[in-house]
Image 1 (spheres, rainbow, N blue to C red):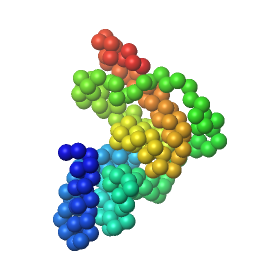
Image 2 (tube, one colour):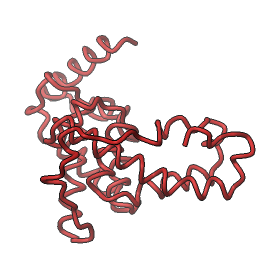
Image 3 (cartoon, rainbow, N blue to C red):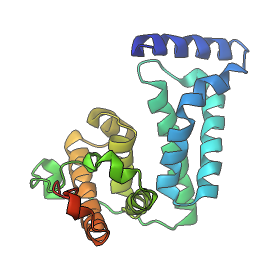
Image 4 (cartoon, rainbow, N blue to C red):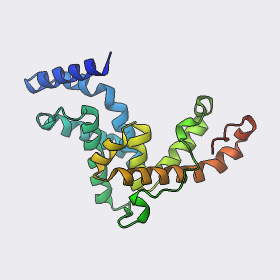
Length: 208
């Protein structure tokens, strides 16, 4: 199914739901359930709380569906609701101290070359190993919130830099800087552990 067709199907489902056919809401959100939960889990680092936030995000999306505007993707709107719910819970718990980058010179676009080209270049046969997936997930969860949310939105949810900037109310250059820093933090965290697993013997760490 093409992206255009998918958008048209979403629009039809939303119209039907707003007209009273509430049963279609589950079909509307079905493709995004995993992404919403993954986003919540990456922010909260607790499976039970992530499930609660995901459910609350879906409930809020249902209650506010009439406010959705087709000038953005439904998935982007849904992830935005999830992000706001996760942030609210973190603020209530006071477990995460949000770092500030206000006034940082390199937020104006002066970025040193990234040493880590792209974490997604880890070969699939490596990621298929459960222990490697666990290491990667823990590393992402340990990122400070301002870097973790940019990384998850850009590299996991595969949103464009502009979409991430709009969602987080940041400049494009700020998003790029935070993504750059997140990747460097992951590099620092991942390389020693992957090397200790002797993955370098097959040249899997040459891209670091």
